[in-house]
Image (cartoon, rainbow, N blue to C red; front, top):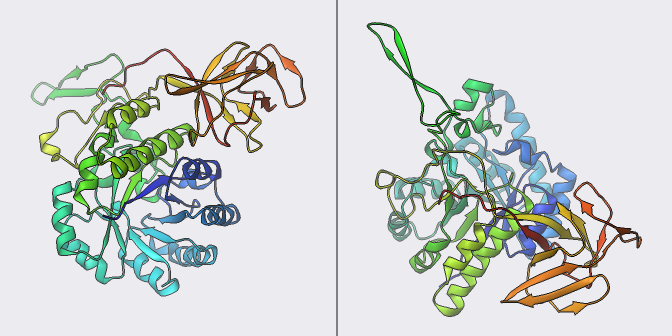
Length: 426
């Protein structure tokens, strides 16, 4: 049975590097033009995107470019030029939503694979067959599609790849077909500038048309989060997804999420997938607990294994705030000997180590100690020394001086501190 690819978000060059370091087989990214995460895409221009693609390819990782917005007539020349640029850069595939853009991409860059965006809402074998005939190699399933339906679709259209979302933010609307942000802010979600209006608290009113009396309906003091969906998390369903044998790519949402999110979630799914293939089973609960260290709106397994009408726990009606029980305190630099502070650290602090791999060594010296306890790795800093050997009483996130480690740690290793626990709404 072919192992499916693990596909991670790359909102900028740093996140791309983290996704690769923590186990992604492929990443998806884009410049701001015609991407449904245009604000994230601004982290790349064509030059830096080209360098990012080269960086990934040197490490055997594919890069899929997002061209998944819905262009208007006056933008067609710009879309055409954009596709030509992506061809020059040498991306492995383009993620596209519309028929016209698919046709134009096949004309300009026939050697580049086409992946149909989830925005196209492909839900059945007729859709899959039709898009395959248009030259689409892979379909990113609508989030509303059930696994049992995908199994049937694959038997009817066996020569098309299927990609599913396994983790990340969920849209209140049907596969992202929402104009609420456009109505309230003039920001069109289907052109990449969603303001996440579904996350806001709303005050509801009931009016008696005969008397004109208006009653205010409230569940919470700050309003009702009537449209606020929990985040998708399918880590506990990895065994049944892999057993099905019909999924070619497992996708993590989150180009605008923090670097720590990219690293933790990628590693959790990487380890869960590898464990299942190596042992035929997965202790997925431990990876679920690791995912809870990231900020989230509460977690749900959404619709892959149950139909939407069978669910009543996919919304967080209390708050749109994101919670996690760990705070990133630092991230290791490329020299492997220093790290950059991302929070606040004092002499004597003990930080948990989350590394891309567990090939670590214990050490102890005047700076501090790296040690293992209960299968976890820790760093204790007895002294806070900058790379220039200046000793500090404390270091905070605004300090741009690299801080020395007692001994080497892998590049992009996270150092984290436990913070006061906040409920995850799970």
